[in-house]
Image (cartoon, rainbow, N blue to C red; front, top):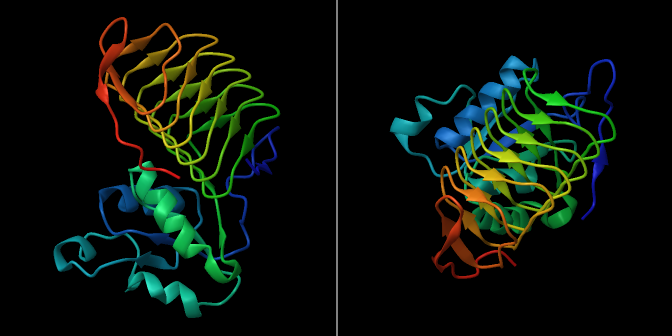
Length: 230
């Protein structure tokens, strides 16, 4: 899981590519939020890419530049973020976007807190109020939502999504492509398998296997979740 070290004290560098122009792949509300984070961080985006839907394009805080293939002929310095909330979709888009040596950027809200010796993978986005305490490792294209917290010595693998207000306690591991629901809690020293969904408000007190949906307090398996991230 390649990572990019981000400067920490006194003020963390808010992007791994501060001098490189950024585009967002996506035109939905998720993409609009990422564009807004860039704006509040003083990192204006070149624009957004994706299918032209007039109702969505009219609400974008950055110009609509064209379909996804716009990136194929863009300047090599342009880096991309993926404005999709679904980790499996981010994995698929990343495979396409990274062809021909294209590189992803990363973006951290100025209202997020990133502690000592944390590392962010390419494509990672931290929303306002997100907190990484210390010695946290985030993989490629991890999205950490508003007010979500990740405590010491935790590893979050590629394409995982931590939704607003969730809590991941220390020395835990969140698998590739897994989603931790809004307001959910993962207690200390827990492993959550890849492509798993932890429901909103659930409390995970024991290890969770891959490819399942868990809900409740304490969290229990509700059903299987078909593999989607490879």
